[in-house]
Image 1 (cartoon, rainbow, N blue to C red):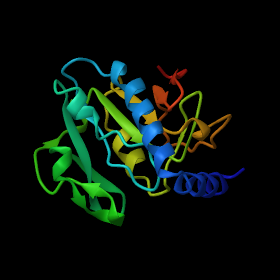
Image 2: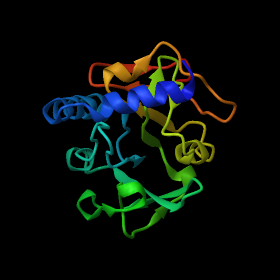
Image 3: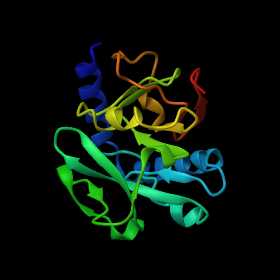
Length: 184
């Protein structure tokens, strides 16, 4: 299956997730992700879009964390991460919730990033939405920063076609398990 075929199939399946199933999956993902995050860490989160598991509860459950949210700065794939309370997020690029203002966190300051995707493999390969936003940003992270892919269990597939610029995840967290990848 090509990248585009896999992306289309997974996006359709994600859009079809019933709200009650999405709520259960999101709670399980958060419970599995929390132990990975070091005390006092600076963590990049995201607001869910199109059936992605929702991780916005993390700041309430872990007030010791410094959290930042993505804000798109260019439709050509540029984004920054900004500190803000989850309650302040507003609709931005492509209708995705993002912070209207706040302190920009430098990529090298992150200890961990929770990253949505359309498919992941057990070795940490990630297929995104196709815009390259996270791919460009991940290139700037410290090598020791955790790159945690967030997905439903059925988004974990045997292989994801990779490209030269792709950066693998150190972990993949689903509603059913945590995968420590070959990268971690």
